[in-house]
Image (cartoon, one colour):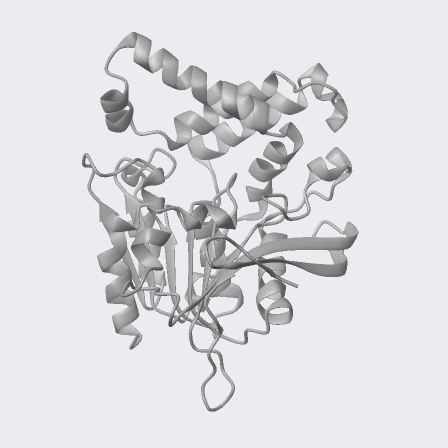
Length: 339
């Protein structure tokens, strides 16, 4: 059963018995934690028409969308996803937040889940756990954006619209894959990691956090925030200290390795719903000069690609969580589907 949260939402857990993973492993119980806001509304045929699924990034959780920058721009009265008229679903992915994860005891014996497993669990939460038989919109940030592409392919008749924010619809390769491999090796090859059964935080985690910082930072923003050597040192030292104390190395490792089975480029023609993909020009994770979006988007029947120019308002990869910048495109998409 869900419990009321201070934000007016409801938090709960959905448990799936004997959950089978794509690698052949299983868990007696897989728990997916979630937060919802608003209430589902059905039409005369019993189809839910106002449900919105929002999916978080690699190291995030669903409650991250309750921030003033995100919820304050989208969920308030009169906003595009006003909770008075929309049912907002914010899951914690497998291995993240308050969902089942390696740090709860299994450590490196936890099933090596991938994005396919994560999307399966999300679908079962929506349909079995929450009783929702249709989604108005699936949207997501970073990893959640990649999951959004997968939703469009795997369940093409289940949603009215799709909005992936900060992603590419193809397997992770090039520098992005190399950086993820560095994260994995830094932790797995650290003697202190001890095959996942570590007693002190392995120093390899710091390398992983460094990669995270580089991947998601914006040079323009960092220069403005830290115009002197001392201020730059203070900011990165504070980030590293806080994250080293609060990040579990096994959870972090699994979160980054989960992307290994991602490749929607094989079936883009299956996507039926209108899709608006939004990236920012200063995103070091998905740099526009690769030309991947321009090459693949023509295969999406009702797809549209928006590249937001770099400005003092963008935040590199993190622009995905600033709807004040891209909200007009969401409003336009909702208008296209008559909402």
